[in-house]
Amino acid sequence: MTTLLLSTLNARYFHASLGLRYLLANLGELQTDTAIREFIITQRPLDIVEALLAEQPRIIGFGVYIWNVVETTQVVALLKRIQPDLCIVLGGPEVSHEWGEQPLVAMADYLITGQADLTFARLCRQLLEGNPPATRVLAADPPPLDQLTLPYRFYTDEDIAHRLIYVEASRGCPFRCEFCLSALDKTAWPFPLEPFLAELDLLYQRGVRHFKFVDRTFNLNAKIGARILDFFLERLDERLFLHFELIPDQLPEALKERIVRFPAGALQFEIGVQSFDPEVQTRISRKQDNRKTEENLRWLRQYTQAHLHADLIIGLPGEDLARFAAGFDRLVTLDPHEIQVGILKRLRGAPIVRHTAAFDLRYNPHPPYNLLCSTQLDFATMRRLERFARYWDLIGNSGRFHHTRPLLLGDAPFARFLAFSDWLFACTGQTHQFALERLFDLLYQGMIERLQLPESVTRAALAQDYRSTGAKSCPVFLRTDPAAALDPPAKRAKTAASPTRQTRHLRTD
Image 1 (cartoon, helix red, strand yellow):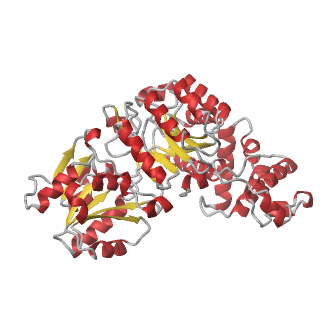
Image 2 (tube, helix red, strand yellow):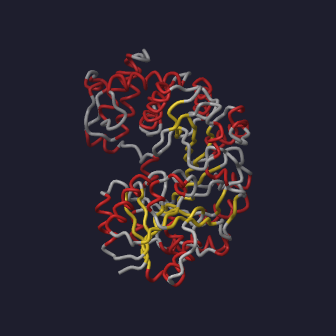
Image 3 (cartoon, one colour):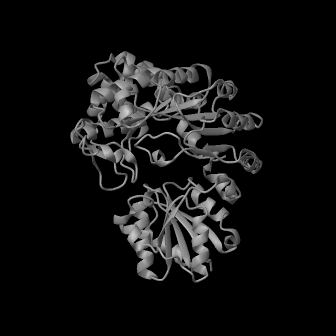
């Protein structure tokens, strides 16, 4: 029998909830009667409920996020139907704002809005002592970070062997980008550095080599960022992999001189460009120096071996198709390894809501609350752009089409890829579940039929890329040209490409 259970539904098994581990770390004397139970959203709600109730808890705390709110609602409904006296406590960004109309919140006994690290422990003590609070909704202010017990020892050996290890050197964000919940923060707060580095060292000694930093603005404080990079430079080995989110227009020399010392495969930077349009940037309260952003991306691409993952958002207020296309083309010329094309979402509590009427922004009422249409982008256009984003991820970001991608994009990347995207959907009616061999054949067909590219040039580029995948089959487009046939399997295995970025991102060694 466990008194307290901390639970959430992760999107994938290899994710590990940092938030639950913070709650456990700060429960004090209640830790011994508490357990973390993580599930994934593809599990049946009845199976989750059975597993939870088998431990006979008195209180269950759920972490609720945009990706699991639907499934969590089903789980809580079942729990309350089976055992109405079980105390359910909710927390997390999805229920911290606009919670009054949410069915999930109505079913729960208590809700903690904001950062619940310390408030959850106080609530549990009150409940177990028979002294419940007068209100069921508790607003938690950001806790002083020097008063928090860090959570990293609560990563188990199983986590370290098979899951992503999330860490954070700071919380909050000083910027006000209205599409983001971090716009509600007053500033960014760093954790005390020496205790944090000591915890990183313990994780490293336990075998962690993949550290994913969740800080919104890792490079905001150059001195702290340099110390963290120094920590890892002193411990470089061939398995080390670090993920950081960077502000695109701030890259001081102290960080540059350290970044260049990391070998290939060790650093990944997620760089939120979002939009290059100055009018749109101003409208959504985003301060970004586009010249410095371009300068920094060029420098990172030219002088470092870091993997660059840049973000753009479709559907920002006032950004029509032509403006987004211009931004996409501008980013393509800077040649990041990946361009993540995302659809604007109306996150609960995000200030972007203030533009809804002026631009007739219409969002999906269900998670993930993606934009359906607006004054600038009608529904049909948004559907085209969603497919564009999916196909781009499948082809442009896959790392498989090194020789084909420049030929596919030419001198008008957005227009050409949108034309190919429209053709691909018209031919297949699908956006998922493309076998590799079929995807290569479709690219060959579309580049010739829709983009009018020469057959010989197209076949040669695709053949080079297909050889690099190490695949043993032979797609149709190669069977029609004996001169472009693949090497024998034994030779082909030796020439297989190194793992793609996605593979490295998911590695757990």
